[in-house]
Image (tube, rainbow, N blue to C red; front, side):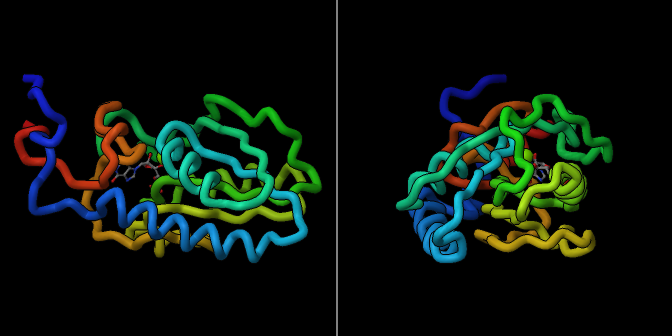
Length: 185
Ligand code: XMP
Ligand code: MG
């Protein structure tokens, strides 16, 4: 059953991050990125669709020129479990050989998607590949993924909002939250 307001589907005790907290953290990350990439061109590679909001706000927090490109990969179905299979649904437009690439992600869970993606991009001989992710779950520590910029480490719960979806919904929430029990029933 559809409820009138998205907020009705959220767990009120579990708003992990408000819009203000997200924006403040992205600005801090942007300061660090700006310093690290001074004097170099940087190509931001967003991973569709979850990273759309992070890309929009992180890129606009940077007071410098950047290029943006997008990849779509699938590792998850419409539910909350990893399928373990990574497929390219949309590849980059840009040739990244010799370029400094910064992958922009919404969340690292098992790290499976990103470790695969990093290996794939490195095979194209870029000058460098680094990762910026807004969220990271503790499971990610089990995979060897070297993440240079992390917004927040979060508990091992399924979260939605700010690009993150459950069955393609909730991406348009400004906050990040867990879902109420009734949504899963
Ligand atoms: P792995 O496990 O490969 O997963 O690091 C990364 C991708 O899994 C999705 N994912 C989530 N999506 N809430 C979501 O909406 C979550 O809590 C969550 N955990 C993992 C996401 O697409 C991410 O890119
Ligand atoms: Mg994603």
